[in-house]
Image (cartoon, rainbow, N blue to C red):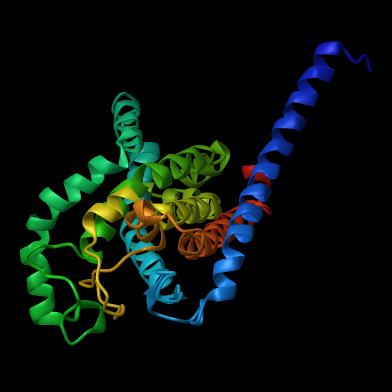
Length: 309
């Protein structure tokens, strides 16, 4: 086989790009670890299981990431629960039911949601969605308050700066990610399987249920996990919507609080002391590991499916 100079250059560029990305991820993790170690050494509380956050070095560092982690995961999972069925419905509609002349522009419209800046979503959530959701939140709290999920929380329902509002905004932000990947996966369903099901007399829904969904299940779940990683790290929108509180998180949708990302952003202007900043960097390290694990899990789901490779 003849090897041309262009092939060698292209191979070097692609290998170098891959190594560069891996090196950057490793360097980010090492940087976070190095910056966090001094503050963790001076920490007077249990970092992983403590629920209070005091990163003032003058009064003695005593910070725990558990409450921040719970709010982060809770709001992201709530958003995912909303976004997954909606994204699935949109993807199936665009690939199986919509006419081509309608599917293409509608797909572009959904994809454009990814181009909207986070701050716009935050402003929309705080000033438009929160007041609109206030009657719904009040009704749920009054009628289903015996369920911990809808119990009275730490945030004012009239204002709407709750995990309930933030989760719905995050769900809208996840739609283009999950829908785009799911749409591509469903589109790759082997035509012979679809035609075979139709030839056996299957209805359109039976075709979707017996061929399209089984073929695209792994890709759909993987897309949802990637969306979860996106929700875990969202900062500006959550910062604008969620009201900060010193009360512990009570697993209610009507709680306020901070995610790890919004907590770091809220205190960024106070990073004038290395030890105080190191506390927030330690929290950032937890978020870094969490998102890395989620994305690795998403990759592992499709690793055994040759049709996605």
